[in-house]
Image (cartoon, rainbow, N blue to C red; front, side):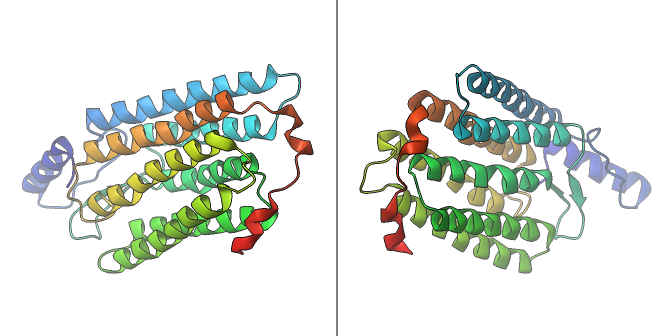
Length: 262
C-alpha cells in the first residue's frame, strides 16, 4: 500500500480530475520517507568519511579499508539520489500504484559484492570462491530489480529466482568462508552472520512491500530498508575494521580448503 499521505493525494486528484494524477518526486514523498532517506544519506556519508580517514591514517592502507569506504560512499550517493527524487519510479502498471526505488538495486549491485569480497579477503578465500560469491550475488540483485519493474504474477517468479541465488550465497558463506584453518576467526563468523541476518530482511520486505504485495506501507518499507542498510554497511564496516588490523595479511597463504566445496 502507498503511504497514507501519498495515497490520499492520489485519490483526491482522481476525484477532482478523473484522470491519473501526475506524481513527481521528491515533492510527493511523505515526510517520513524523505526523513528516512536523509538519515540513510547522512549515515552513509559520515561512515564513508570515517572509513576513508581510518584508511589514510594507517602507515599502509589496505584493500579492506578501501572496499569498506567504497561500500559506504556508493550507498551515500544512492540515498542522496533517492532523497532528491532520482532513481525512483511511480509504477502504475501493477494492480495498484507503487513507488519503486530502483536506485536501491544500483547500490546493491555494487555494494553487496564488495561486502562479500571483504569477507572473502578476511577468510583468505581463493579466486573461484570470490567469483562464485559475487556472480550469485549479482544475479540475485538483478532478479530482484527485474521483478520490481514487472507486474504480477511474473514478478513473483523473479523473486523466487533471486531467493534461490540468495540461498546459494548463504551456503557459500557458511561452508566456504568459515574455514577449517581458522582464517578470520570469530570476526569472520560474526560478520558472516551479521550479513546473513541483515540480508534476510531484504527479500521479506520485497515480498510485502511495494515490489511485491504492497501490504507494507511505504514509510515502513523505507524505514526498515534504511535501518537494515545502515547496519549491513556501516555497522559491518566498523565491526570489520575494529576487529581486523593485519598489515601482514598479504603474506598469508590462500585458504585452500575452500576448494573442497567446488
